[in-house]
Every structure is written in C-alpha cells, then in structure tokens.
Amino acid sequence: MSLVSEQQVRRESVQETARRMVTAARTAPKSRGRDYVVAAIAEGETIREIADHMRRMVERGVGSSFYLRDADNLEAADALVLIGTKIVPTMLDHCGLCGFADCTEKAKHPEHPCAFNTGDLGIAIGSAVSIAADMRVDNRIMFSVGMAVREMELLGQEVRVIYGIPLSVSGKNTFFDRKPKT
Image 1 (spheres, helix red, strand yellow):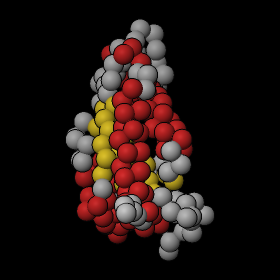
Image 2: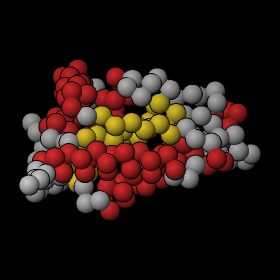
Image 3: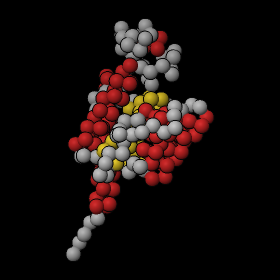
Image 4: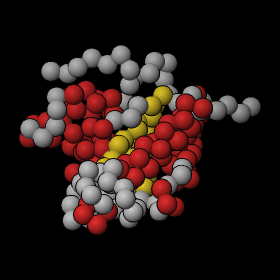
C-alpha cells in the first residue's frame, strides 16, 4: 500500500506553483521586447534570513513597523517568489512617462525608475499571482519583502524595484486578516 502525506503534497504543490510563477513572470509581455525582469525562488533558511533582515530594518529605522508583521507572515510561508526589475531606459522617442523630457535625460538619473520597467514588472507580477490563484495557493504581494531583498542584494545590485510573493497552503490564508505588530 502506498500513501502520500498531505504535507508532502503541500510542499510539492507550493514548489511547483513557485516554478510556474517564475515561468509566468518570464513569459509575460515586455515593452519593446526588452527584458529587465529578474525572478527567483527562496525557501527555508533564506526566507528566515530575509524575515530577520526586515526586523533589523525596523530596528535601524529604515523599515516601517508593518515590516514586523510582514516578517512573521513571511516566516509562515512555504516558499517565496521574488520578482524585480533593473532600471534601464526603454529609449522611446517622445515618452516622458518617468517625469523627464526623454530617455536620454532619464538616463542621467539611474535611480529614478523607467515607467516601462515598472510597468513590465507589474505585468509580470500579475501574471505570476494569477498562476498561484489558478493553483489555489495562498499568496500576497509584499513591498516590504522586496525592500529587504534589495538591501540584501539577493537579486544583484542592478535590480532596484523588487516585490516578494510568499506562498502558503493551509486551512486559513495567513496573509490576510493580519493584525499590526507594535
């Protein structure tokens, strides 16, 4: 007789979902066919390191108090999908969506995001979380996780706008009905 435990099924489901989410982010449309999106999956000890870093950010005064709640949520996750973008001007004529006259002017301000890079990132994230929804895996898009990952340079120095998407399979979605930590 063969028996596969629910815990094993949950672990495998989350891992497969995370892989499919990264694939969805990669294949999402990108402006002018230029791909500056970077994606990765964190598990286990790496998740704990990110959560600890988020707490230290609050202690140092560079993270809001809600980072503490998000760090606890992150530690309850079975996996974490990270999706970010490099900031590279798209070099369109007559754009200015970033607030500068054109891409040449924007290029003089490398920390200022290109509207198309962040738009592509949003499309990639939307595509990724739709996979999680289709597979009935609980998730939440977290800015706070991305800030910690950026500071830790886990996706490299060039990736400047990052979001984390923790994943969980449980009887109650741990990422909603959250109470603030004080």
